[in-house]
Length: 227
Image (cartoon, rainbow, N blue to C red):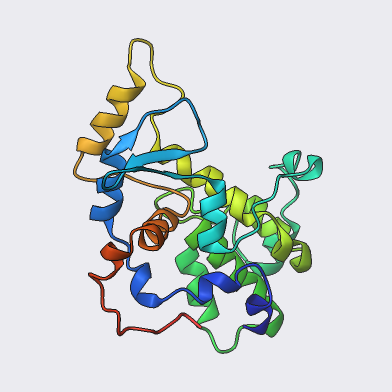
């Protein structure tokens, strides 16, 4: 835990527990109030008399994560590296495990000590910050990055998570011939359920920061944190 608290993930563990109860109603309300702009990495919406916008800067402020630009090496990282780290951590084929499987492993008191930190990190990234599928399957590339834990801890998880989160808030860039991106977005919002990947909780945390009166509806006497 000391390693996590000394890393960019520290701010996540210091979040008030009561603020982190995912409110699908709030997120859905914000998505339905969005203002359509030409900016692909900003989410604009109305909440009260003034428009608000949620960008990489706001994401960084509420999460404390590393959001600087990717360098060339990061951008060219291979998706087909040999599964060396996967084989060290797991005894199953690549792509067969989920975050729930990892949490079960971490609950085993006989788990090798050297596996605990890497497994906790992959559960945090694939389960909280960068989930990319509804089953929370592990991302092989992220697992291989654990071969260098120090580099993993310093990686640009803020930018990675943001770029995975925001596209689901906006009209799609690519649609089928004859389809209108705005109508596709409207149809998505009219469904009973929809899927948001990445870390949509950051948008909720942002609203709590900029609209204090909304936060007062929650129990102000609750001060527990995750650490």
